[in-house]
Image 1 (cartoon, rainbow, N blue to C red):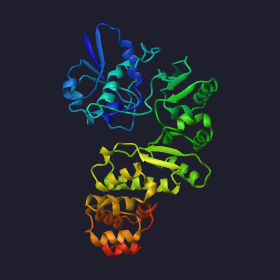
Image 2: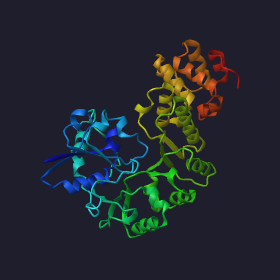
Image 3: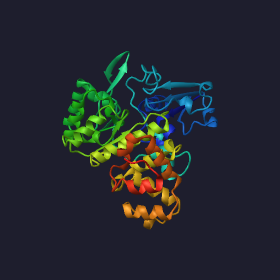
Image 4: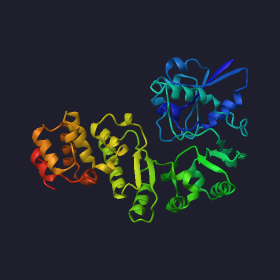
Length: 391
């Protein structure tokens, strides 16, 4: 008997579950009843687990996540085969011809989902998205590349369907968008397994159409941007000019490997655009806080964007955190000039606030990003207690 491990890299690398991997489910369905094959979903990629298998199929959907070799020690020593759009020039799954009309079976995920819900603090557990796809929604892939051509794959036969195609690919192609519209008009209730990456849309007219037409509401509830400057800046300008009045939430990918200064600039710009649109656009970082722990100011910017930035500026948020850490009672920390004066005159300047003042001094072009949304720039007090240069 051969033992095959199925590794959903998108889920395992982030410990975050939103939807199963379509191609992984197809291969599980294909082998599930084969008595000569023991096939299982892998719950971790530690050495003792990996060494149990004769073959390991690694499925990667996201092109943004780093290669698995950066996460799995001795990656190339194991009998690993790579599949999915997240790899360069790799097939979607093994046995493409044999599984051309096979529907996925996601039951291999059930044990880990149940375990994660019952053991939320376990190091093996996944965070389960509250919008996790499944249940009554029939998994559908409308198109699949086969021998160089995009061919129709699944025909839905239920009212509730979950589409596993990339929504940007659907909207960028007239034929596939027409099919999507036909399914909506025929009464299907549709969700997508993936977020819509608005940075991948070919034309801002597409964004205008999905923003203004209520039938695309399910897509609008799950947006991301792989590039903050592609289409997002246009969307911000439209909201500021009140051409678009809808509330829009977008998870923004910040590429791994950027230095802390660039990451901080990016997070501050996101906060600035949030404030300029009066929170009608809410840009939040896509990655979890563990990606931002290496720098205190960056971590503060991440936390600021996720909490209640409408209550204060980034500067005021750092001021609060810095003095709370230093032991100042929470009851006396308020965002107004007279309270700032009182706190600075009675307590030593916190190291974190000194670091922020130094960063502002070196990056004066970011000053508006730092103080937008606050009750003051505190110029007089900052000059007095931190020896800042005048505006």
